Image 1 (cartoon, one colour):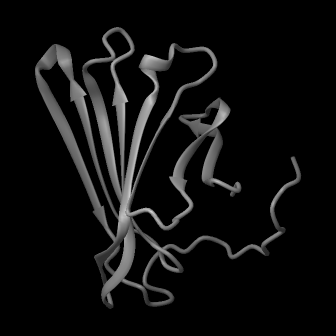
Image 2 (cartoon, one colour):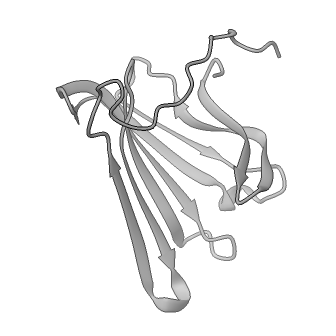
Length: 144
């Protein structure tokens, strides 16, 4: 957590660790604006190759217990060799106090002229309904 929202500074995938410098703002802190947009790029890449974000809300989002007020965030990831082409996008629905209620990811596979779509929805909010992460104590905001 930062003063601007939720940011990612390190990712681990398939045993490989990569870092984001500066940290990538993935979800902006809600404010008075209905729509927010921002850009992010790693210091090692040109700004045009950076990720594009938009966020709308509050909006009614479906949860297992009915509609709740939340936010929709869209991330677009451009192709590194041609930033005018979007290689992938992720739409995420977030309800404050509950968390992520859905994610839709689309990834282009240019050489095959196709795309993959992955969709996940929160279907249960009952304790013991699935694998649950360990609950950890909040240690506060790290100092800068």
